[in-house]
Image 1 (cartoon, rainbow, N blue to C red):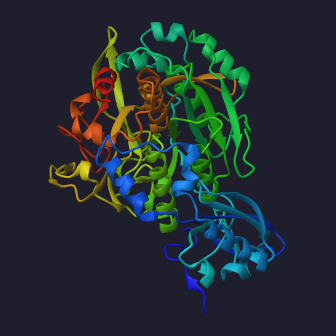
Image 2: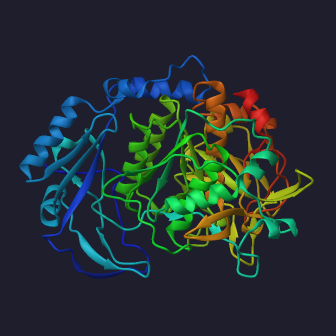
Image 3: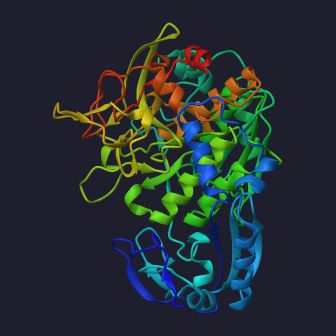
Length: 525
């Protein structure tokens, strides 16, 4: 029987890329095959109950997931036989993650999947890529839902912004006393009314696609803000490593920001940082490794990387969304930054775009605000939009994901004053301080600095969730439905815009339901 095109696997060259030639046929690479769920219909029904807010839907234990909803044994065996037939090595097999990682040469993978891997040069760097669809042999049709890693173009960008040079880039207690508008994560937790707690017994997973942290920097930072440093563990995924570059404006800034914000808000929670290559395969493998980690057992995941929906293949979109569905069945909350490029999300076509994976309806999408405070309380909060610096909170309407039940009946308000019914998944769900002008005091590569971006909001919410999980004694899990049923649990933001969308009373496509009112959220959960 003939090979069939894998639906949703189609690729095009990056805009502005130049073809150099064929990829080296002897180059070795690893490719992740994502398999279907066993008992797929039962799994969908289970997730539907959770999405509907049905509290009777049971939480699955990690140790039980593989047997209940993981990959079928017959599917795993089919992949093993396929690999052997093409001289490919099985380097990893994870039934719970529904993932098999194969190793081989470019020539072997070209033949196995009917592709022609080539080398491209792009302003952002060279990459190995392909065009067209992946071809699956009959024995893998209906077994494999995604083949990731043949193409190693960068999958995502970090969503943090350093304070502009004209501001006071360094932070200090003296600068704060002089009225400089910056905040420590603990100050923001207080302003947002987070319930007392430190996340004891919980684990926060942080996904990173580059850069790294230095323990000495973390120790110095937490000592400076008067908190005992949390326990931080680096987890290697697909050969990714904790590798600080020394460039605070590079991925180190993301890594340090995420750890310091989450660690300051929930200092007694363990922090597991999953380092992976910045490819679609590496990103997804890091997420699924965190979700199904039976050693660290995170109850909340913070993701501050992403890119416009239009930059992803449909197979990647589906695979990430299904991974987040896995998380929901396990009682894991997934907090994702909504992006720092306003309503266009950095795409170059002039249209409106939302950031992924924030746009997954099984993620808690976290947007950004500018926060002002006086006398220990919030004096004003508006949409983060720094036109001069080009940064603004990401948000808008998905072009991919259907309207979730908990968003039905909502409206989108544009900056032109028009209001229309929300027709697809709306982004974000919630928000928090993200403007670098009212940014977070952090330490990166030996330097105290001020950083903003929606990257800070995801770990802020993750820290809140860790506190709530510790207080409750069990994970709150998927919380979108509860938040939308209780919108007063968030501080409604009604001022500002992120480009084409304006803030309005209730949910909007700039700040979602609003910033956290920690005490109220604790009550509804």
